[in-house]
Length: 74
Image: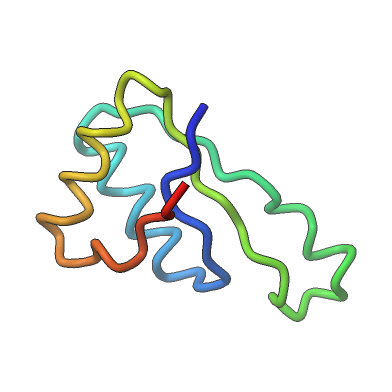
């Protein structure tokens, strides 16, 4: 799986999940349970991962939605 987005913003995470779901692209939100470690402050970023063969389509969807700035450089 390839990292698509890394953010602390719960709204961005929900938006990206909805975009991927609508496009039929499976995604995984990693590090969600790390909030236990940081005391629920939200300082540790969550990562949205997609399959390597769908990463280009996912990036295009984010760009089309106007949030290309959220795409991870990795």
